[in-house]
Image (cartoon, rainbow, N blue to C red):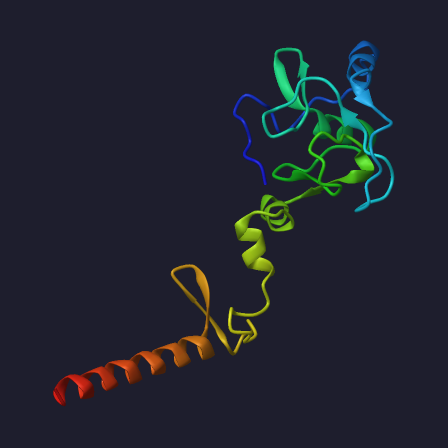
Amino acid sequence: MTSVSPRVKTWPVSSLSGDAKLEQRFWSKVDFDGPTSELVGGQCWLWTACTHRDGHGKFGVGRQTVYAHRLAYEAIVGPITAGLVVDHLCRVPACVNPEHLEPVTNAENTLRGEAFSAQQARRTECPEGHPYNYENTYLWRGHRRCRIFNTNTAREYRRRVRNSKLTASSL
């Protein structure tokens, strides 16, 4: 997941349709012979012009700067629903191939990524191998907790405390 720069407009983006000069300028900055994506199939269309520090392409439309992948998606597929972000299914931020792009919620985009929060959300078991399911899981301070693991840990802690008191009293 990438943070959105306040200088780069995310939605709604003006379409390329109707302005042949703008459309020609936009597509001249795309390399249609990019690497083939193993995740989605087909070649990535790589943005060759200015990019944001996170690798996403930027394009100037009038006095606005817009994300190139959003503009390409809108030009070929159609408008992006307000509130959605465009996920790169190929995981290449510079790709503007609409077949590799999908509008999703920001939460879905984050969970599809490789960030720590996404990795944690994909886990199906606690560190001890117990399942994260309805019966065995509860939330504590916004985090999933395993009932079995925490019960075992508390039982072990009480046993150690009890044994240390017995050892201390026998001295």
